[in-house]
Image (cartoon, helix red, strand yellow):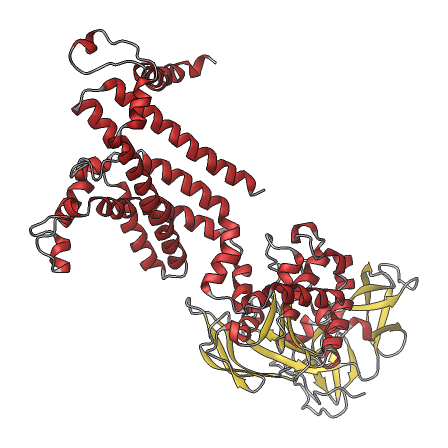
Length: 277
Length: 358
């Protein structure tokens, strides 16, 4: 017991205490400045009630759902699987090159990646506008959510690709070959033979990337939630409420709501996973 | 129903290995055909090339009169059973058997109907709603066979069909497979490394080595008149005696004795040859024969394999009936049965007629 004490202490100080502290100040009217910063008062569940009636919160919740569904559940999942499935039979050289490039998007720091995307999406002289011949299109202003979804799909696909690559290696080749001899199409093979084998992997992968995407803060680096809250996902909303609006108590309450939403999503996935056996 | 015609077929792997090397082979409609050889001889690659799972580098595969060399496996009208049976673990037995029909878009009812029809003859009737994981090895194999039969293809390909079964079950499955093939009359090609399996099952056998066929013939021909020393060595549950010998005055001088040269062979004096005779065709006796000292006795059940040490350090094996085993150290003379002595030339090829004299 003694030798884990330092680790437990660190966890307590940096994880458990802040979590409990968040719950506590979520129940107060604590603010960054002013009288409520000095003497915050308990307000019960007022913050939660206010949040649920707040049009901006509802907007954020909806945008987060859209972001998770578009870029993780659909984008990263499907692109990752398609890459893993196609690269399976590709020449080793090609396979390694594509894998390295996809992996590179994943391991680069967010700030670097955000800067690269500014260069790509820039209104004047951006790479994308040059390629499409659409000079003057401000992608991050005119299509903020679409830009974020494409960005996050590109950024996070590596994880799904790697996970599915190793999952596919576990599908017995003779079963795939039987499907070929029987005359099954590619889609039939994936649906009837491959998917049942990797169902557990699909669920685990979807759970992980959904949670990561829901809590991802990098949208702030690209759009800062704008224009006019059009890309304000929950983490961005919380940050802006807390540090730009100074409403620490309110922001904490919303953090707790985000945490609860995460738990619900996780519970649903675990239930699906258990139903398999 | 369809015959298979393989013409000048080569299959070269990307790493340069010529697994099948310019091979010609004709398999008749309804024939039970074995591809036999040691591991790495190309037999499985040949089977997979016929199935279309490997791409032929040159030559052609013709099935039922139709050139299918570049055709997808699914469009060749071949069915295949893999060594591990490749049953889909998440489907029931009935779904597994009906899967070829599902791929073709047949109705669920039709799939079930065919599964019931096919499984009846394979004693799987009560097992249709089980999963493959709940079946024994023999039952799994029969499900895989049923699925292949449900494809209604002209050709059935089996990769090492018996090797995943334990010894006892293997004999049962062998008999079953032979009966099934006769009943269906389906052109069947199977791959095996087990010569006893090939001899027992096949109408004809192709013995392969390094991507080439070393002998093509009926089990009797391959067993009694192996075309070369490779086949002679490979076929038979006890290895054939292959002894260095020299021709002298119309006799074969081998292991210190002279044996009569088989009829129809005349060779100059002093020609070096290899004399071959199976232990089963040597009798312990006192007549003309190879004499030596008994060094080991191995019990084979109804008979024993006796090894004698002959002059010139030659080791000769012969089988003796049970309860006639000699003592170790005794002197024994092994006499070949008439017409069973084979003579191979220096290149290892059989001299004399290749066909069996019956």
